[in-house]
Length: 357
Ligand SMILES: *Cc1c(COP(=O)(O)O)cnc(C)c1O
Image (cartoon, rainbow, N blue to C red; front, side, top):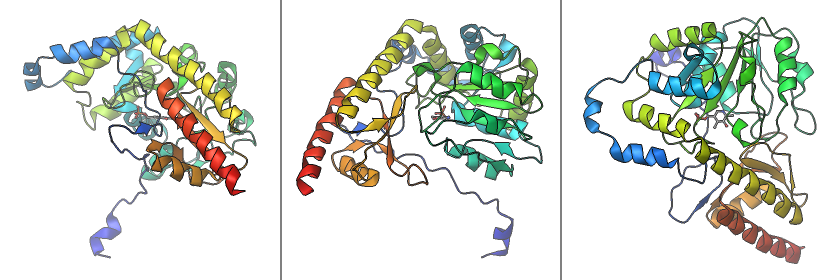
């Protein structure tokens, strides 16, 4: 090891799901939306005048902040935007989690949380989910340096009701509580209405899942004006121009098309419920999902083997080689056609499995 390496900040990076890109593959492994972005987004892309790229973008991203404030029924000073919610969350960890006391998040959850905690040297503890993979809210009602959890949780797909989240908030008024609502538009209950009553609540959402724009990188946070001011201070001391001109333009269009948003999220919810029934018929158990994915297990199959077998057919799902969940697969809800291809394969797999026994 060279001497200079002793002073390197070392981190174990987050491992994203595979991002292969073949024309006919069925990609159900990273919770992307199978439908295109809203028609207004495509039109704005076609009409985009590259001349505006000469200029720096608006550092306050006000066009996007304004439509989001209207959409969330809050004031402009209550909205923060960033390069995907990963950027927003990382900024929030840095801004709000500076206590000596450990922050709390579930043992099974979005695997970026421990990565940021390590990176920013934030002590953390991970209260275990119960046997059925539910968050035990009592575990968050003790002395801590901050709280964060996704609702619905990933990769379990289970959600807490807004009143349960409020219970957690009521017991945590001296720290910042971040609720990561990446999947809330697929049937979860948002706690956005609580931001005016709890000035320590930060609600984070993303355009990556319900708005079909993972490739554009847009996330946002809503909270009390004071919370948002602190976040902006940190952002401006880092990089003022996080949101580029094109992203701002397309992001606005995505928010304005409420009808398309309702239509596509509704379709995904319907496909998800049909998928639960079909998969149950094939012997799978799935948790009661409020997200755009199912967390499934089969009493007879090794999840890893099934994952590999699916991959050979160019069907990608997510397998986590981690304690407690190694018998599970996370399957993103695709189009009905994509799901049919999945069921078709699983029927063949079942027949093969039966023959082998
Ligand atoms: C997908 C996801 C995010 C990050 O999404 P971005 O693409 O960075 O907006 C954050 N939290 C959870 C729980 C997610 O699943």
